[in-house]
Structure formats: structure tokens, C-alpha cells
Amino acid sequence: MMHFSRSTCLFALALPLASAAADHDCLIEAKQQVDLRSPVEAVVETVQVQRGDSVKKGQVVATLESGPERAALDLAKSRASMSGELKSAEARVELTQKKQVRA
Image (cartoon, rainbow, N blue to C red; front, side):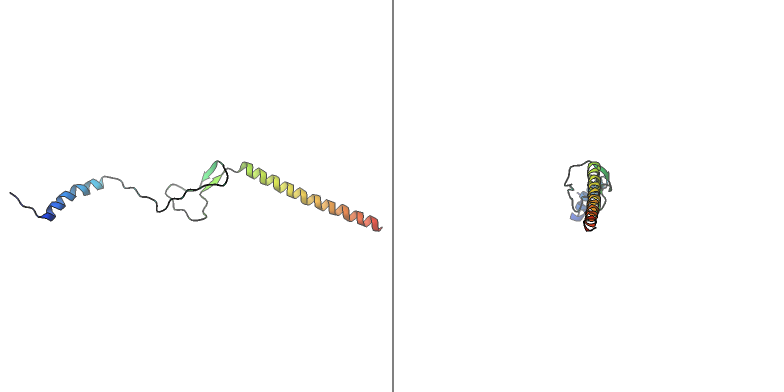
């Protein structure tokens, strides 16, 4: 009958576990996960990062389609411009009227 020391038995038991671990892929989990949301409903136009990339605070990670919002902005700018031109024209008319009263 053969006698083995306790450390030899433990080594013999651990050997199959070590070789089995080498055959498996590992799973790396993120340090932190964050849910991203937009205050408006829209379709994602572009994604600026890849899965697994590190992201910093303030970094743009996606761009939303902004067709309707861009059109609304252009319309608002146009109206603001027209409003300024209208006020300028009204001021010129008022000035001309004051000049005529003095004359």
C-alpha cells in the first residue's frame, strides 16, 4: 500500500482544475454601468463609441436625429430676424414722422 502526503494529494486534485480553467474564456465585468437617456424621444443617428470603450464625463456617445428640432430652430431664428428688421423699420418710420412734425 502506497502512502502519499497531504500536499501531494491536494496538488493531484488541483491539477485537473487548473487545466480546466485554461480551457475557458473569462468574463470581464465593467467597473460601473450607466443608463443613458435623452429628455426627448428621437432616433439615434450615430453612435460615437464602441462596446467596451472607456467613456469620460461630458463625452458625446451618440447623436440623435434632429431634423424637426433643426427646422424649428431655423424657423425661430428667421422669426427673430424678421422681428428685428420690423422693429428697425418701425423706428425709421417713427423718426421720419417726428422729422415731418418739426418741419
